[in-house]
Amino acid sequence: ENSGLMKAGPRQAEFMPTEGKTVKFSDVHGVDEAKEELKDVVAFLKDPTAFATLGGKLPKGVLLTGHPGTGKTLLARAVAGEAGVPFFFASGSDFEEVYVGVGAKRVRDLFAAARKKEPAIIFIDELDAVGGKRSSRDQQYMKQTLNQLLVEMDGFMQSEGVIVIAATNFPESLDSALVRPGRFDRHIAVPLPDIRGRVQILNHHMKGVTCSPDVDPTILARGTPGFSGADLHNMINQAAIQASKERATHVTLKHFEWAKDRIVMGAERKSTFIEHEDKLLTAYHEGGHALVALYTDGAMPLHKVTCVPRGHALGVTSQLPKNDRFSVSLKEYKAEIDVCMGGRVAEELIYGRDYLTSGASSDIRAATSTASSMVKSWGMSDKVGPVYYNDRDPISPVRKQEIEDEIRNLLQQGEARVVALLTEKKEELHKLAHALVEYETLNADEVRKVIKGEPIRNITEILQ
Ligand code: ADP
Image (tube, rainbow, N blue to C red; front, side, top):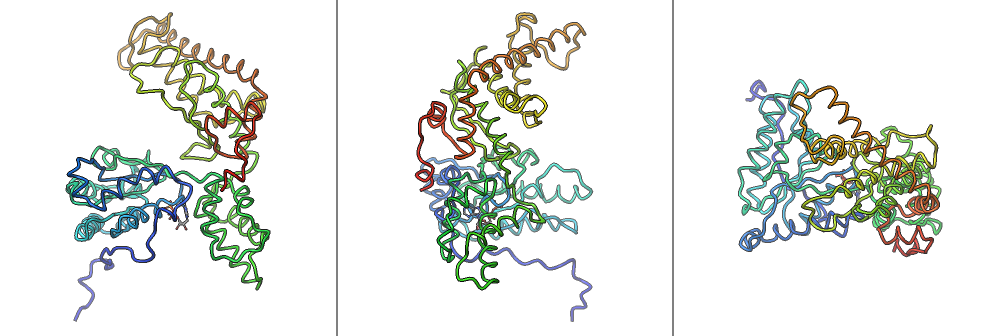
């Protein structure tokens, strides 16, 4: 007879592959780049030995980063589904332990279970719960769990056919040991969907829902900037439930509006619904960066610009280096500073100084860091001269002042150039910002057309 006295904590179930409907890449929408990047993981899992023989190199660990509900779990399941291999799910918070050593044992069990079924995928949601750099009381326990994870990841050979995919919304908070080569050394961003992605996600999840003719996914997508795939799915479900409560024959636009409001106002506030005014402000900010990138000699070519949030950023302007940059000239560094200034200057130009926001702080940090290196490391200031300064060696107060003045000069000169440029191009800035609000993501070609007032692909065409 078991008196129960011998039991050490709750018994935990063995790790088993996730059952249920097979997920395919075609079930995940609005994240084409992430899917593209995961294709070789699928190829590898289909035939690990062949892949290794052909000399293919693959990471053991892939880190998916992005807001909650953007489809990271779904993507990982799709990789398993496409490759036809078992999927082992664990959440970082499962390893938060009450008893010493339990978390580490769970990690061991997880890997052992997956190895028995290889090729296989292990998915660890909320990796930051195990591998965060936080300093809490139970840090010591979590350290053991983390160490066990590192041991397991180092312990298997690539040819073994186990791939670990993990997800986090806070990649910068991970312990640096986790992201070293041979561990989670490939990072793939899973962004919030833009308007086109939202239409696709809505269409996908609205299959099988009986809607009235007034329900148009394009209009729903327009009204839900900032929503994740999970928010959209949730909105459809809530609308359908509300319709059935009212014994309606169809789910109508009204039901969708009701469901959207519930999610936007929701107690949890997990979603990132973006108000129109905020979206417009971000559009001017990013539009400013983009125009400066377009018109400044020496700036890296504009790639695309978006006012959909990513990571901590409210919007992103991305540029593409022309070719591998071995050395960068003074002109190019100045252009880099100017592009950084573009966002803040645009805000001030449109809204006035009193309405400046703190949204430009990372731009200012980036510009300052470039200017500082120009003065202290690269000998690009005439006043300071070709001298290298580091922060460890003592330095006279006079010199220090001179360096600081030069850094500030570089930044203020950049700001002045950008004020002149954007004042001249103000009409183009307006056009670009409004197009960004409508389309959310524009590539460089589209930006060029929009500012000339030329038509770009019609919104309904884009949304097909
Ligand atoms: P995450 O792991 O990023 O938090 P999930 O993959 O758990 O997000 O998403 C939860 C649900 O939301 C999915 O099961 C799916 O129904 C829906 N969903 C989220 N993102 C997408 C997407 N990109 N395409 C289609 N459906 C999505």
